[in-house]
Image (cartoon, rainbow, N blue to C red; front, side):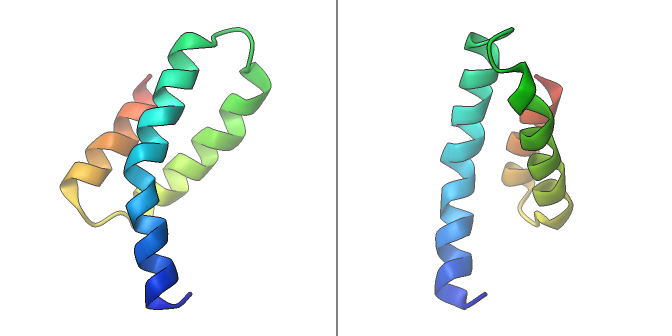
Length: 64
């Protein structure tokens, strides 16, 4: 991945994690089949995260 792509991907993680939290909280029972794939992606990204703030956001996704 080029540095531009990596920077773009990193800049999308914060709003994406907040969005998925809102979807998970407001669509319970309607999106159950999507929870596992998104949690897998979140945990994978959490393992690579370096910034404490980002780690906290990703942990909140898993927690909720």
